[in-house]
Image 1 (cartoon, one colour):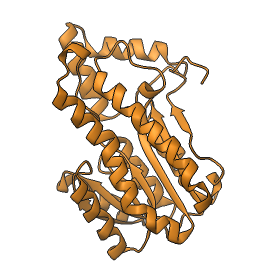
Image 2: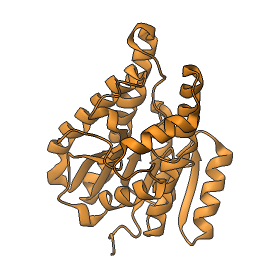
Image 3: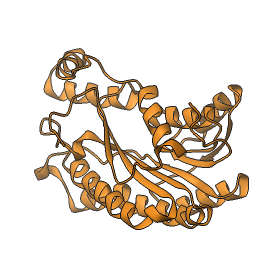
Image 4: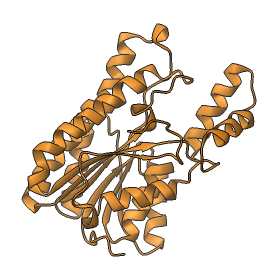
Length: 264
């Protein structure tokens, strides 16, 4: 199936590892010109080299996508390298852990900055290009915690700020739809990534439990019976960024192996 994005310029933040890397690779395989963004230069360079080795077109930009000036620099580099930005995938490291009684004002403000303000800044940076091209795909990698709050995990700042990001995207989608721009959010469940493994292992240690035990519990709670693979999320992301998904906007698309129990 031709996704119709060959030659389009895409920014993928958090694009050097895990789900972000898988999305960057998938978009490149579909012919997009990908700007791979992450804080670590070594990981960015390795990802770009891998994409190029498979015939894809990618350029790396080490940057912190939670900072206004860094986001502006990335967008400018994308234009200088490939042209107008038509696809932007917002995927940044989530807020710190902690239950409400442990959360400071600074932690709440940082979470809002990273999940909402940074999304706002990226949107500001690329929206003029998308409007000029009459085509745009804005996609945020979020969490199922925005749909069904994680009660068993100490993620107060994450649950609070991620929901705000979903509302941001839903509201924006109504304002830019007639410009040929779609705005969607992905809700991730448990995936086989280093970040997920490290987090769950640390949580298990705090509880005095074995990580494998926690993983087994999650597998039992997931109808598919396992964790997801980054490539499975990337396939959904690529579709939402494609011309084939032109009538899908303002949606929160859950990719979690059936973990969430709610109907909507």
